[in-house]
Image (cartoon, rainbow, N blue to C red; front, side, top):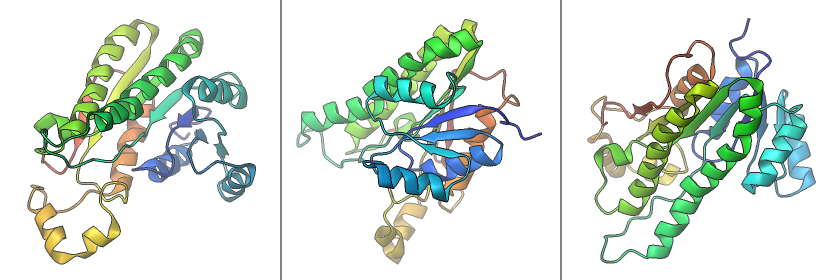
Length: 246
């Protein structure tokens, strides 16, 4: 039997970072996936997505409370797994030139909204006897990135949130973990034109002990493992997947 057969998943930011590969990996394991994304801004876009992707549903809402309500309605009152795949631009700015508003916006996108969504889903998970809260974060705060302190700070706050929520929710059998990638092929953080330039690509690869960029599908497989019953005794983990960089 597929590892996630009968499980309901809510995945945020489908078109960002590793959203598409994660959706595919979870569906391949038998899960029913409800995806949210800013691209689903009209009925036609949502209908087209559902028509092209069997076992997937498209959510209309983006506000955390509305999205939680919609997920519970569309998924028969049960969200077993939340995968927060939210992204935000890694703005390069030395501390003396940075705009504090960019820091506020990053914290809102990467910490406040995911925290609110998790909080809106926890009561139903608790009533169902457990669940999974999985956050795709970043390895950046594990090492630190000069001139990217705003991004690394927001991602570090995400990782800290995971640690605290894991302890808070363990008695409810709600497991909370973070997948912390870096140097993964994705237009969100590594645009195609950047990787197509040989000099830029070589500069990036020099940072990675394994000597290559990661594949989004590798991150997706880790998410699928953490979502499954094969991983029932891990919570509060921040797992770097960064080719040995972190």
